Image: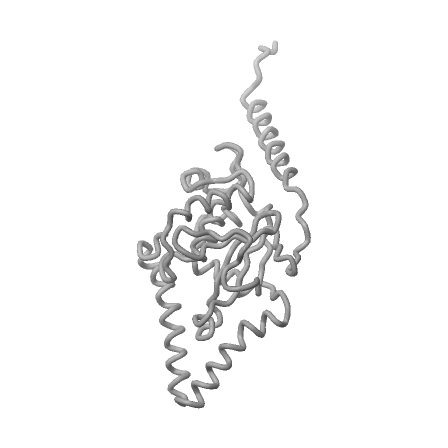
Length: 243
């Protein structure tokens, strides 16, 4: 005769159904985003980039980055204890990449994680919404000293992506944030391409005209030194870029 108590298999089945329903509810809360509107500087759920004065003239692949809220407002870390809101430092957005919120982990509790880094994610600081993750990152960086070489705007964006556990990863850093925009980013328009590369071309032509080919070697060495510093600091001496 049946005992009236649910079996272990029935309990596991119920638990699995509850988790699926919970995950479905979370996904259901992802309301549609507004269209990207560069004229109003609105880039919902995007990572954005703009060239830096002087630095980008010498190395055009280096620039300033920020991340946007669900309403499209841009936030960026541009100075010690300073996070800009809707005032992107160093000019308007030149390049952007809209991220997929379905690739994020928004756990309502420890059992609700959709990523493989459940305990690490909780310890780092998980979030229940996209904007919640950004707000937590803002609070964290409001007490940080800015340094172009150790704690910068890329660190800010990487911190936010780790809180989101974007694409199931807790290993976002300066290098892969820069690579994400470099290889997948979309230019806002032709003028953005022009203002990103024209200063570099002018400096390059003037340098070759005045100094000759050694200038190109020096410029190439400068770029290699920058790339080498960030690669070594990110993957070999992690405490150097601990932000």
